[in-house]
Length: 261
Image (cartoon, rainbow, N blue to C red):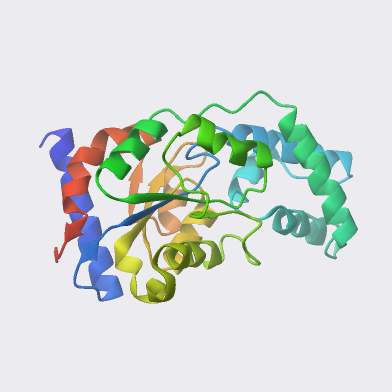
């Protein structure tokens, strides 16, 4: 079996499992929701380093490696986890504002994060196949949000975007992806989970997408073992965005299917 056949077989099996679990008769994908950091931009190493240095500045501890496990949380959520662990109480709102402002300053001073290799080509294919791309991110970094139009021209609609500013509960809560469904499908969002997929690189983001009931593709663009992403519930896993891009033409024909394996 060649690589393309193997990928297509794995995809069909994953779709079949998802259909059985969710008691759906078919998939009819019209929406692809993409996380941003670590999926569209190679920005997670900057986030991890800036979180580590920021916490140290405020007398707290967050190892670089641990920052990857918190990827997808709102800034306040990450700050409170560390504060509870090390001080026994949540941070005040003023502390959250101060810590996150410092973290943003540190992040913005770092080298510009480049678009993830294969991301733009994948997005172009997705759109050419009549599927609407949407960004669903826990980030509130305006510098990255502003770069979406520059680095991915003609891909994203500003009205079809979910950021940290839009939700009360960040990942791993399903609210961000449920909101994405609502923005796309309106009042029919609850009946439209078979019409969407998610592309994520972080365990918390995968947990959020799975909790929202959406078929989830993991791309392992960071240092975490594959098994961490699979244990979070990913339906399918690729080693990079480029690998997913290369496989897309073999996957897309199966996006409208009543496959039951």
